[in-house]
Length: 239
Image (cartoon, rainbow, N blue to C red):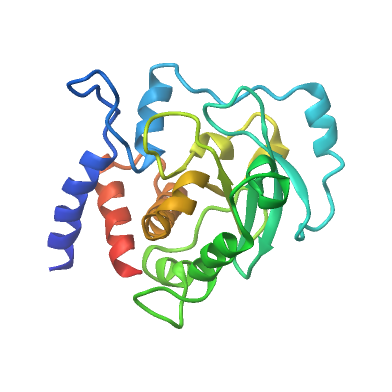
């Protein structure tokens, strides 16, 4: 029964993770999960991670203190011409949540502390399926421990404006874990700030979906799409 559900969910999620295709009026259809779509674009030579200027590498060498609320870091993100400057707005049991500076409310943006707290509570403490357990505990029990390329047990969650595709809610980008600059190699999930504000429930489901991708990448970097996407769909059901 479990495998049947995974297969059905996998078939549906493959459609959601397919490349953006033009519709009848020439615009692009939305892609909810950007993980597989980005991999396909990278295979065609598009959307590389931004280059890091020498000054950025020098600053990284200074960012050696323990991360706390208020810590500012640089993040390479697909579709950006330069690194994203973001500040830690939440430190949880299992995650840091960073928000791109220009989208934080005190900087004139629209992301509030309440948005961040809901995301952190879902990841660490409580889900609709189990008010006593968060996404991290539920998914690691089923799928195993996540990747750990940075030696930090916490996962980074970056809330920023995803600059490619249409309707990408979130993604896991394995290229960050392989970054040429070791200090940029992080276990990180990307969440689009617009969807966090406008479609909170969709964003929370996507967080669970993308976290499974991060876990699965640790165990099998070259998994078949239907298996990985099917398990990410099942992860949403679990939480």
